[in-house]
Amino acid sequence: MDQNQLKKAAAEYAVRFVEDGMNLGLGTGSTVTYMVAALAKRAQDENMELTCVTTSSRTKRQAEGLGLRVVELNEVDRLDLTIDGADEIDANYQGIKGGGAAHTMEKIVATASDQVIWIVDESKMVETLGKFPLPVEVFDYGLTQITERLAEQGLNPVLRLDENKEPVRTHFKNLVLDLNVGQIADPHALADQLDHEVGLVEHGLFLDMVNKVIVGTPDGPKLIDHIR
Ligand SMILES: O=C(CO)[C@H](O)[C@H](O)COP(=O)(O)O
View 1: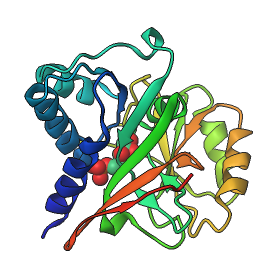
View 2: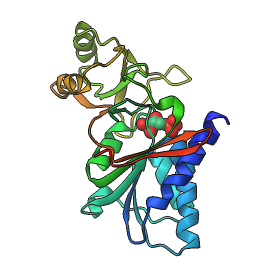
View 3: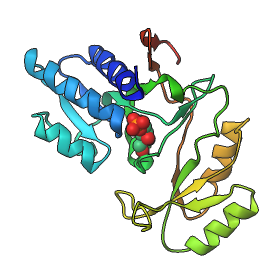
């Protein structure tokens, strides 16, 4: 099975946790694309009433196109469940997200959710975070200075560029620096350090946030439950 088949299997498994009447957070990425397709089908087949909040315009377009009801986050009090992908998940179920530059919206939505499920293929499961560069969203204003400060801390920031060598822009029109930090032995310490960095909008460390992980494996989707 290739990586996309593993993603699809994990994504399709996840929709069983959706219940009629839920307020749902929908993440961003290729795995989420499979999940949104499966969700829309289940909602239609079972005539479910769902209210969805999306974490990118890509997911919004797809969800609305498939007939799901999408509202703004400010229009709901809480979300019952958010289903999202991840770039890396360590042995303690701490994660790196932001490969799609959507981590600021994703973190706000995850924080507003009672339950969070991550759907990944097995290549995303690691012992220690850090092989995947850690994304941070920053303003244009002060880019030179924040880049220098992060470099001085040994975090090796690299401005993310698209295929045309233009800077990648987030939903909020900000920039992304990818930090090449190597093995992140203490994710909480690094998160704390980044949380105190002036001009840094949000980083991609998602700590103590996930309740279930569904991992696509060649033997079928594996559910890791009761994480917190
Ligand atoms: O954090 C994300 C976007 O900001 C995605 O969830 C993450 O990059 C995983 O993407 P994919 O499912 O395409 O592998």
